[in-house]
Amino acid sequence: MKMESAALIGLGAMGVFFAPRMEAGMGRENFCVIAGGQRRKRLETQGVTVNQVNYRFRVVSPEEGEPKDLIIMAVKDTGLEQAIRDIEKFVGENTQILCVMNGVESEQKVAAVYGWDHVLYSYMRIPVELKNGTYDFDPDGGHVYFGEKENKVLSDRVKAVRDVFELCHIPYRIQEDMILGLWQKFMSNIGENMTCALLGVPFKAFNCSSHANAIRRMGMKEVQAVAGKLGICLTDEMIEENCSRPFNSPYNRPSTLQDLDAGKKTEIDMFAGTVVRLGRELGVPTPANELFYHGIKVLEEKNEGKFAKNPAEES
Image (cartoon, rainbow, N blue to C red):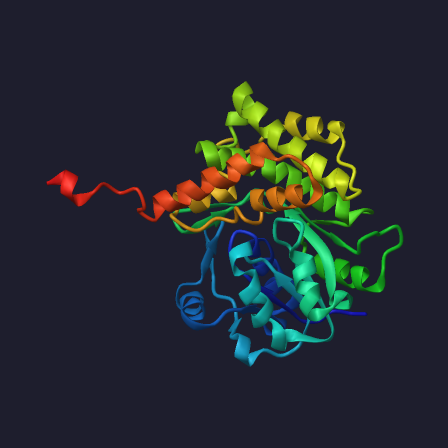
């Protein structure tokens, strides 16, 4: 299996990790960004700025799609259902799909429509921050992780994606146990992303606040308990290893806090909402994640103006 064409849907904080290198490596004629309507117009006229460089990628609407060898889905959870519909014409007989979103259920949602023979597991570990309309990140500061559910021996399709990433100089890792890797990333996101968003603090809080770290551990322990009920072993050592690692960009703000800062809807349902729902289904108490969930929902309501002053009180 050889991959010669690719498409990306979701040119945001995750998508910018791929797009410049994929266009350079595969050629403009073999790579496109999927977008329609006003978003397509904006990308074509304004482009996207990554590390102080403005890019104008070839943009193709969902209606104009043709089958590609590789599709990378880098949308937010709030846009996943629409993105699944939008890639329909880009999926051919041999197309492989990487859904590099956060969370632990996106692959199942994509596979429910297109089948597991088209879907590989994947996730990312790289800090990307949106500042004044531009994306900034260290191109060598993280990796995309991908593979089959188990990768003791690499399948042909995993090798084919690997070859694309090597051609395009995209840092990657192929884990032997991708389910464990997905849940480790999810546990880290719950502990850090949710804590920072609820408290309105950057990652630096974990370098200097025992209280922030206590909340982080509470959230992670609940993920550990839920995962255990599903037969996924997240150990105490994994939690401590995560909590002991330094933050190279301590003043960065995680994705959920960035969304709140921008007045956008967050991915809270995919994060704490998933833990709470699975906890109820499996009989696992999740009070910390219930606080994350309801607290961040209140902050969304605040952004929507639900608690604005009564005009009569201002007169």
